[in-house]
Image (tube, rainbow, N blue to C red; front, side):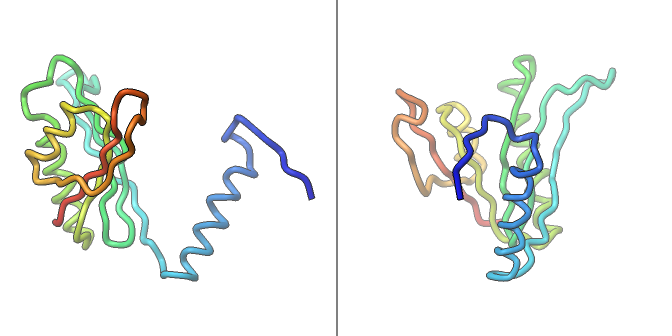
Length: 137
């Protein structure tokens, strides 16, 4: 047995880790019923101007990425996308949602939407704190 260090996730071994862990978790706690969930805001010309990417699993919505183009900031686009994602998550049977951020402006937007901080990693990245927020749906 030996350990191999790699800096690429494009190989089959890295994919196998996810597959094996998913199989273990399914045996341990049941099927996750994981489904991708995206909310896209596009201009009339089809240009992506904002988006939310995440997934639903085990009755939770996880919001991995939320981005808003500079031209749309301050217009409640994040809140509209969160509302849409939460509505879809409810229709999928989800009972709660979570998101994390190290941006203080984003944290304020999420708390305005009813999210509350449940955890924090100080100095992640250095000089900031990564906050973990949740919301009951």
